[in-house]
Length: 112
Image (tube, rainbow, N blue to C red; front, top):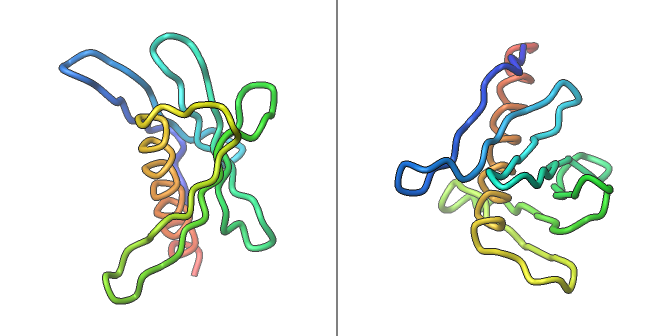
């Protein structure tokens, strides 16, 4: 069972920079303080790739997680379009990908 009511606030020196929350469609929504909103969606046959899109549905960044059994964590192959990408945006993408994997793993464990 997944609860979609929680949100995560990203701050920089006590000033809110962004907000992250999961919507009812199972997407992670990233809303920045200055207005832009982006959506992280699971893609691929096994939902094993994660894409951040803008409000127009344009793919901005793709994250391909590879599980490292030796360190028991994920390494990411990150691809993006030719537009410059802010490092905070990339970090939020990795964080939200991990968040999505964790939430969905918990939902599967609860139904088993």
